[in-house]
Length: 550
Image 1 (tube, one colour):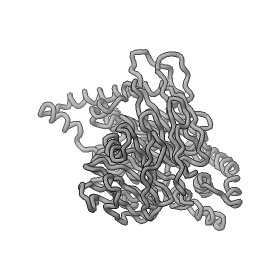
Image 2 (tube, rainbow, N blue to C red):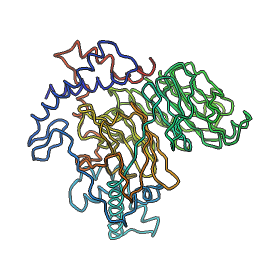
Image 3 (tube, rainbow, N blue to C red):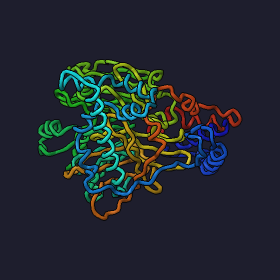
Image 4 (cartoon, rainbow, N blue to C red):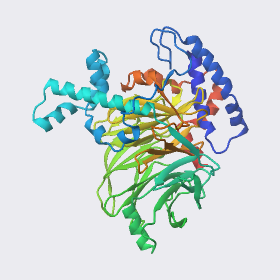
């Protein structure tokens, strides 16, 4: 078991080295051992797999196979089943689903008491509240009927995704890893460590503009809403239809680009390498930046002057997102801060909560990159492990969602669109990459999307077409457009839709259920200490940001 842990850690560290901009000869030598390490790990896992449960392999008393076991998508259901695009167009149905369906299923079968109690603790009395609001009372019959309806809706949603089809198109032009993507109308804007911002016309999959001007790798992008773009366009005597994009870079600058003319209209020097960025559409508007030193800064959209500067985190800020008047910042050391916008000219952000690594459990990850996505009272966190963490930010309660069936899987990004939660997944042991889909708000596993030789996906953006179909873009080692195809007809998609039975069987877990698995990432290689020390220095807790800042 010790050798398995050692191999898993080495592969995790090599995964961090692979996304560096430049590599030394020693680092290249370490990466060249990846196939050898994967082969040895596969041999050991095959030997250890058996009647009992082994590390990273979920056992059920029968002989388990070494590789991921996934079930092929079933045949298409009858045509009366609504297509995925229509079901997921908005969140009306998702909001109507009040209690997590797994709890209902466990109630019927009499099992899963531990997970059921955790869900009841983190999402209190939703069914009862709903019934009281509607009728002033709630009978057991009404609750059971509602639960059955929710289960039926989920089964319909799951069935639609099992027959979903996507066509993939590669956007070629960047010379290095794509670190960030945003969507604006029919355009996609991508930022890369090659220092460029590129604008792509999605319908034709062609490069529309090449925005060069940063002297360092581009780390983050943000798109202000149209009404705020109009204000800036008028002040610059540009068309009211002009759209702007903000880009942050390791060169300590935030640049504002006019997309139609392809020019930088404003460059703001922040005195710190910019590692995260978001736009806050409140009052006159603000944009919030995070730095490599843990600083959070607020800037006026009207004057472009600095309104506030706070040393909020101990290490680099890796993600900033807004939700109404709230701002959420996450950092490499695993801390999450929640801010409220007070809409003032000075110090507009007021700290509401700060939860450190002791609460989130996101510290010490091999990539040192925490990505967050807020939703109501919950924040979904990805931090380079096999799980998605869920922080209930008002109380500090934590739970986690299984995003890979082995601990060699890493989650690089998490995103929400409509009633979907999407987590990227990359298996360090075999190089397989996929997107896992979960329904919201229950966080029930729907399906996994992948294709042969899928690259590691580090960033994600999504929007819906006029017909309600999904259009996604993933960035990382490649920049790829995902176009959802109609569910009817004989069109064949490039993406394989599968279901991972292990993800379905162990979806939502209370924090601390499998703490031993988390500790394996920090396992020290005593027998090969010199080599291990070198790798840790290259792929330690802040390696992702050091890669960008080079």
